[in-house]
Image: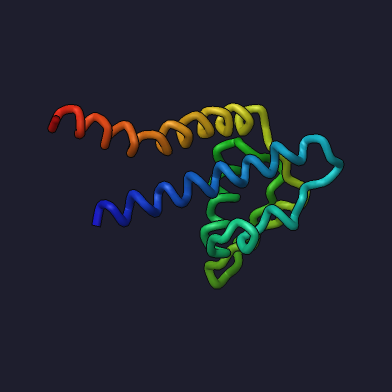
Length: 118
């Protein structure tokens, strides 16, 4: 069960990293690349995407997000005029280092186990 939770957390962290990466890439253009910044292109559920955009906005990593709550409990999000903040850029840089380290971690652990077992 814990492995499944870890996989979901990593999936979300990778999605956050990719989303902030799109925002970072768009700093040189006049508008946000909505072709790259959506649930389908990121290969995640619409619900997960919406929740991540809201979390990033609430954490101050992106600004300009318009969240609307409807009477049936659903939410609508307009992020078309949003942009990354300085805090978002910092988080993206730190997250990049974390994900790189996490990618090497399995190799390091197996090498360590081999040395200890050998």
